[in-house]
Amino acid sequence: MERLKTLHLEDVSPEINVDYKIVGGFNQSAVQVFWEIKQLEDNPEWVLLKTFTGGYMKYVTSKKQPPMVFSLADEDAYVYCDRSVCQECVFRCKRGFIIYLYIKTRGLLEVPLEKMTAYFKS
Image (cartoon, rainbow, N blue to C red; front, side, top):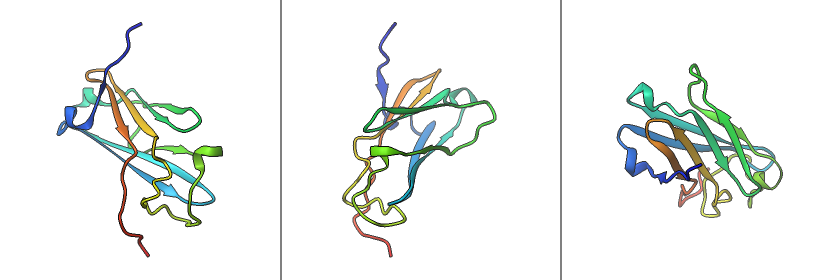
């Protein structure tokens, strides 16, 4: 076995773009993972969401279109606020989560969940 060196978005853009959205909030939440590729051979083979308690892994079939949805449970679903919709606020409840995409032609792409909105949306 050989350890894979992780790549970052700046290493593969503009050919590959990956984004995410946290949906839901206090009672239920999930992470949606989106990707855009310019070359068909750059389609990810699998996506893994590393969380507080472990990881959620899904294989990308040839017909699968983004988003890939990872429902969160247990401590992974924990939030600091009581909002029903995630505001991606300064609390960053999912900090430490990392999205990994394995692309056969490129390698392992690492995307930390670090987005933060400075202001709450009403």
